Structures are given as C-alpha cells and as structure tokens.
Image 1 (cartoon, rainbow, N blue to C red):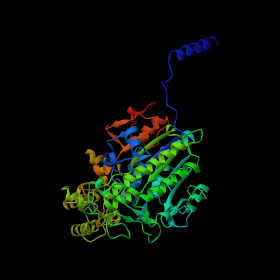
Image 2: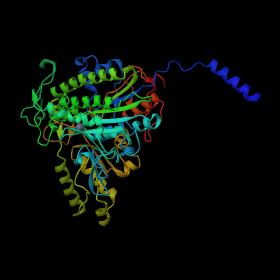
Image 3: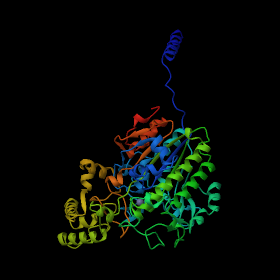
Image 4: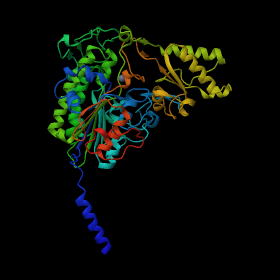
Length: 541
Ligand SMILES: [Zn+2]
C-alpha cells in the first residue's frame, strides 16, 4: 500500500513536470476527400492566375501543396487510382489491376467493381450490379469506421469512383446511371435508396442540362492554345471541335452531360445533398465523405490537356469547388474539416499535338500488333493458339498455358520470344516476364512502377510498356495509363487545422497520402499500406 502510494505521488510529480502536448488542434468532424478524375499537376500551376479566390486557390495558396506527388505504379487508370489513393497501396496488393482485366480462371473479362451476386437498388439494369468485392484488403474509410465508427459516404458519376474509396462497409456508395440520370446503389450496401437520394432523383436535375450551351468562362484571348488543336475529337452530336458546345440528348439517356462542366455540377449538388441527408460532420466522431468528380476525364479524353475545353472545364470546376467549400463552411465550418484532394491519374497530350510539339506522338494499333504477334508465334512454334486472349490489356499478355504444355513448350522460351518481338516493333519501351516480376527482378524506377502494378494472382505472363507519347486509343482524342510523368504527376493537397500549409516539392507518392492521414487522425493504417507519413506537414503527429 505504502509503495503504491509513493508511486502515485511519483507519477503526480512527473505529470506536473511534463507539460501536455502543445496545442493539439481539435479533431476534424469531417474528412472530405476530393478526387478529380484526370487532373494533372500542371493545371494547378498553369491556370493559377485564372482561378477564383475560394476554390482551388484555397488549396494552392492556403493549403499544403505536395507539388511533386506521383503515382508509383503502372497502369495509371481510374480503377487502380481510386483503389490506391485511399488504401495506401498499389495494384500488387489490392488487386485492382485495371478497369477491366482478363480473369485467367474463367477466361472472361472482369470489370473492377462488377459483382454478379448483387442487384441494383434504384435501377433494374446491370449498372447496379456493382460492389467492392474485387478489392483485396481495406482502406482509410474502413479504418476510420473501425476507430471512430465514422459514417462513410462515397459518391461519383462513375461506379468505380464511388465504390473504391468508400471501402468495404460504408454507410453508402452512390453512382450515376446515365440511362436514367439517377443516382443508384446496389444490394451490397442496402435494400433501398435512402430518402435523401430518392428526393434528389425526383428533381430530375440531369434534364436541366440537356440543350445547355457551354461557352468559355473567360474571353477567348485568355486561352493560349488554339480551339481546334490537332487530334481533338468532337462531342457526341457535334460536328466541330470548337466552342460553343451544346449538350444534346444522348441515344441512351443523359451520357452527353459527362464530358461537360454540367457533370461536375450534378455531382456537386449531390454532394451537398449527401452532407445534409446523412448529417455528415454533425456527430460526436469524424465522418468521411469521398467525392470523385468524373467530367474532366471525359473532357480530357476528347480534347486533350492543352485544349481550351480542358482549360475551361478546370476553371469552371474551380468555381464549383468554391461553392462546395462555402457549403461545407456554412454547415460544419471549414475549421472543423480535413480536406484531402488529389487525382487518379494525369493524361497525355493528343499524339498529334505531341507530334506537332516535336515530342514524337503516335497512335498504335494494338489489334494489328497482336495479329502480327500471332503470325510470328505460328511461324516460329508451328500452328497453335498461343494466347489465352488475343489482346494486350493495359500492357498484359496472357499466354495459353494448356497449349504450351501440350506442345511441350517452355513458358520462358515463349515469353522471351514475345519480348523480343515487342521490342522490335518500335512501339514499346520495355517488356517484363511474369517470372522476372515474381522474382522482383525489375530494376529502376520503371521496373518499380511495373512491379507495384503487378498482381501475382491477376496479372498476365508478359507486361509491355509503350514508349512515351505512344497510345492505343481511337482515331482522335487521347488517354492515360503510362508510367510517364504526364500520367503519374498529380497534385496532392491537404487542408485544415491538422496540416501545416505551404508548398512542398519533396518526394511524395500516392501511397503516402493514407499514412499521412492516419498519422494526422491517430489511427491505424489499412492492411496493405506501404507508404510513409509525411511528418513535416503534421501539426500534431
Ligand atoms: Zn480516363
């Protein structure tokens, strides 16, 4: 008794002598995650002086701006991007290796969030048969739920944009069905749409945007590149690639809203409805709202990142973001919110634009290339069905192992043959075999990106990486997916009392976002998290 009393006395001396942590900021009531589909780092810099005061500038000028943040895997596309940025890991671990990949066991293509075992809620169509079933492990949203019993809501125009950041058991995940113009979910999440989603759908807001004219926000002289730059594609229902554009009624519904600023407007309004409908940030513990804006991606694919349309949709998005920030401020107070903002990937200029700038842009015809490969394989190894599928899927080639066994051909010999063929076509920068990747023999920054994107269960037998400024895409427009800076360099912003503002050109990878957020929130990391917390910016590490 005496002993323990003196121990207590000793403790109280210690407590008196050691001051409490200096001024820990109050814990945020809401984590607002904003992911922009296809948002290049340079948009935040090139267009900075044309931004309004309270949108993106709040992040660039008053937030924490990681100016050298990069994706550290290949391929840089939407499904993998949404799965990675909020899980702190890469396709090697979470298994979302592409938007669509080839399932070696069934011999069929699989969509990253498709789930044949669930049904649509708010729709009878296949658009509702979605869930995070293919995502292996958990993410930041899941850890927030486990630690704080947070409400988690994920929303987007794209199903994968809503589903993947929301984690495994969110309060809800809602995506947009272009055919009806409604937000929907699936039986994975709940049996019925909540009232606030039903009420939002009943407004039929999508209808208001059909027939709208989209013209430049600023005077034409503020747009440095020509409006009819080489390689641009026309919007559906239009013959020219220049302003003004008109949103026409689509063949199947409201899909023509997507590549215009109206797609972001529709999601912005839905985000406000979610904040109210779920009373996010109003409870005793912090909630999570993940909003993934899709329209800049559709626009960028059509016109390219230097187009007047890309510039304009970003400037309009900046104003929409200001509206969202004002709304959050009114409802919760920005001082009570932690914002994280990033993109799922960048985008390449159109090959024609790149070529005109002397950068060597090319369109590569993958169908013709595979035809040539099949011919070469037969010429070398005799007639046979050497590939499980005659396609290159995000760089992956799948060999037909049964055929190789039957012909007593060794996998390495055939893979080496494919590699030499690929490198001889003039289209590819690098080729990696499955054996090499499983052994971890892929040196250099390119090798590391391919390894991080390679999932042992789901990826192919050979992974090919195209040369810079080479894409396999339609006759016009452009795409992303490469391990090059135009696709990997994205802005990352943190904002709120938990973070020290400033510009940080430090080495920073997409997988560092979640460790940094977890350190700020004092919670455990998701299972597969491989990044590092960026301690320098934390007010209360
Ligand atoms: Zn895209």
